[in-house]
Image (cartoon, rainbow, N blue to C red; front, top):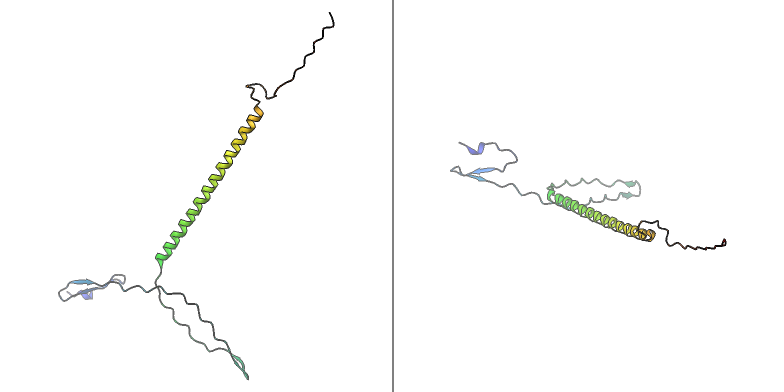
Length: 143
């Protein structure tokens, strides 16, 4: 039985066999390193010829792009950090809003108590008129 004739899918690691049929699994080739960004080179300046004027610069072919691997772990990490920072910022915003509304509620409550103490008069069920000066003059002329 010839093991080397078995077709393998392109995503599987190749399997090598020894003379006695023992399989050895080869590893995938190392991924390409992450390529650094290189800005494009500026176009050469046009050539000035006194009799012909300006001639276009000679065309140089662009270099072929180097295949790079996708840095998906870095993108996932950056996204996770971004989502975490956004959640942290939202938490601080909600905490600040809760503290502000609590402070305003306590201030309104304290002012309400002061208003009630000022206007109640402390008179148990009577109207809050305060003290009344009564002057009574009694004259008995018919005696």
